[in-house]
Structure formats: C-alpha cells, structure tokens
Amino acid sequence: MTRVPVRDDLRALEGYHSPQVDVRVRLNTNEAPGEPPAAWRDAFAAELSRVAWHRYPDRAATELRAEIAAMHGVGTDQVFVANGSNEVLQTVLLTFAGPGRTVATFEPTYQLHAHIARLTGATVSETDRAADFTLDLEAALAAIARDRPTVTFLCSPNNPTGLVEPAEHVRAVLAAVAMLPEPGLLVVDEAYGQFADWSALDLLDEEVPLVVTRTFSKTWSMAGTRLGYLVGPRWLVAELDKVVLPYHLDSAKQIAGRLALRYVGEMNERVEQIVAERERIQRAFDTLPVDHFPSGANFVLFRPRTMSGRQVWQGLLDRSVLIRDCSSWPRLDDCLRVTIGTPEENDAFLTALQEVLS
Image 1 (tube, one colour):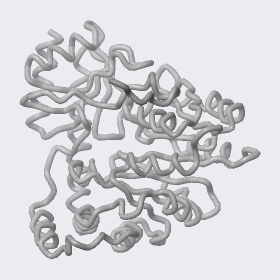
Image 2: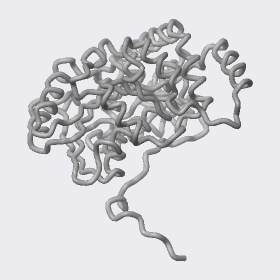
Image 3: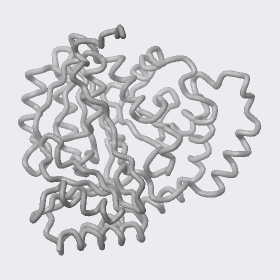
C-alpha cells in the first residue's frame, strides 16, 4: 500500500497518552474526584433543549468570554476560549512559534508544551531544573539569553512535579523574555492554578508579554467537556482570534462553561476538600519509605526508596489502583504521580501502597 510520508521532523514523535485500564480506583489523570453540582446538570440540560442546532454557535463565544472576564476582573477582549487548555496552547504556538522560531521549556514539565511546539515546526530549547525539580533560575535566564525564544513556558503548579513557581521566578523570567532584542512571550500554564497560593494573573498588564492559561477540567469537574481559556493582553487575544478555526467552540461547550461560573462557591469548597486530602496523603507519605515533592496541585509526585517505581506501580495495579507511572520519563527515574481522589479512593490507595511497600 502506498503511504503519504509524514513530515521529516515528526517521524520520531510519540503521541501523548495515559493508559486506561479497568480498575476500582483510578487516580492517574488528575481529574476532579466528584461530578459537577446536580443543579448545573439540570440547568445545562434545560438550555441544551433550547439550542437551535441548525445554526452555527456564537463564533466569538461572547457570553462565555464575558463571564470569565468578570470572574477575573478583566475585559472581555482579554479572554480567549477553546476546546481545552491544550487547544489554547496549540493556538498560541500556531500564532507565535513555527519554523525558524524557538520555544523554551524547563524540564521536567508538562510534555505537551514541547510536543505541540515541535508539531508547529519550532525548535525546542529544554533546560533542566535543579535536582529537587525547582527552577534553576540562573540556568533558565542563561538559556533565554542564549536561545532567544519567541515563546517561553512556565507551568505553575508544575505538572508532573506539583511545585508552585515562586512569584520572583516568574517576574525574573518575564523580565528576561521582555528584554530580548525581539521580545518573547511568557506563557504561564495554570491548569492547576486554583489549588495554589498565588497566581500569575496578578502580573497581567496590557504592556507585558504575559498570558495565563487555565482549564475547566480540574476544579470545575468538567474534564468531559474539554474547555479551557487564556487571559492576556488585548492585542494578543486579537491575534489568536485570527488563527483559530471559525466556530471552533460549539454551543454545548459555551453553555456548559457559562453555567459552571454560577457555582464558584461550590468549586472553592471542592478545592478546599482536595487540598485537605492532598495534605493528608503527604503526611502519610512521611511515614512510608518514599520521597515526595511539595505539591500545590491536585496530585503528588513521589519516589519509592526500597523498590523501583515500576514495581510499585504494578503492585498497585494488581490491587486495582491505577496511578501515573512517570518512572521511565526523562529526569523522573522511579517517580510516580497520584491524583487526589475522594477520601475513600485515597484510603484505598494508601492501604494498597502500604501493602506493596511492606
């Protein structure tokens, strides 16, 4: 059979995926442990019944953007929405990266930053973090000065490590990209931002080359909806609107997101519950033969001391508990990542982990 050849620069790439197997406790994809409020479901179903399905959706998602803007105290024209934060990232990179341009990442971090950048044809500059996974600021600033990236990524809280980037680090990186001969853009990926104690949203300004991306998948319990957004300068959002496909955000997503914003109080309660469970799991880790890393997200990265990461992952799977195996990822030897679930799911995980490690 004759096959059309893939682009030369993409032949070696592997897709991004997470194993999906039938288990009793699933804590591997950083989803919210609970469903959206029942009132949201009812309101969503009612509005769906009134949608004129033969008509295209609002191309600009005006109402949804206005609601998000009001929540963050910014203008509607400072908000861009798309099918999950990954499409937001993709649109940013299609607009500002590409052949002849460089994208900077600090590893380990979210794999799709570099993956999508390579899909656009950009060169990726990867700089290692310190041994404790914190940002090596001196090395980061040197890489920016050397490689002059058009787009630089910081993930806070970082995935998969869970570490929150200190505000002084974000400010320093932002200053470095802004002072390049051809100024670059800093993208702060806050997919888990609601679980952290500070946000780069505080640094946004019309004259600052900074955007912050967020998602409805985690704290809003809407992973099945695939809805994300970006907040940034008006001029930048206008450029993204030129690149994204027309009518990219369907009517159902726009309704789902708009209605979700009525339940900020419930969302904040869930965040508090997840944070409390995260702290409980980390305290339990202190009594086990594992090293774990401080997390400001809805997951915790840890490394067993007495067994390989793969052995522990398999032992948990044998007990019908699925977590994320990061042990073969670059720079993450023997590391595993557990999503914070319900108290019952977390109990099952800790019990299984104790059995595996004993």
